[in-house]
Length: 76
Image (tube, rainbow, N blue to C red; front, side, top):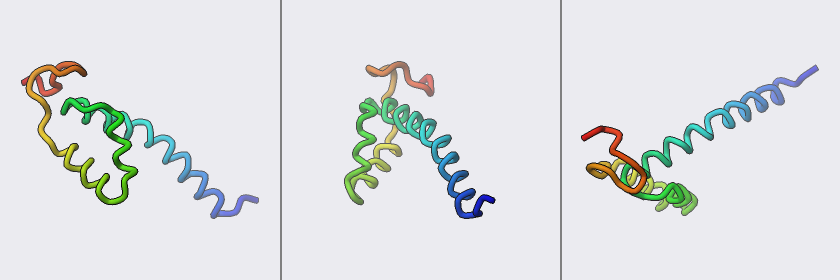
């Protein structure tokens, strides 16, 4: 018999694994839109300041035209 705590924990782990990779891909794509490397995601490991800085980077307008990571996804 499976305990309910173990079952819920297993579903949570499976959900987190299913969401982690697409979440990383979206974050890297957004950083590429503003001309930053995907390695800037590691800024999030700096307590408090890192999360705020990353939020500011995510909210920054993308570079106009092409950059080293490809064309502007907005097409402008």
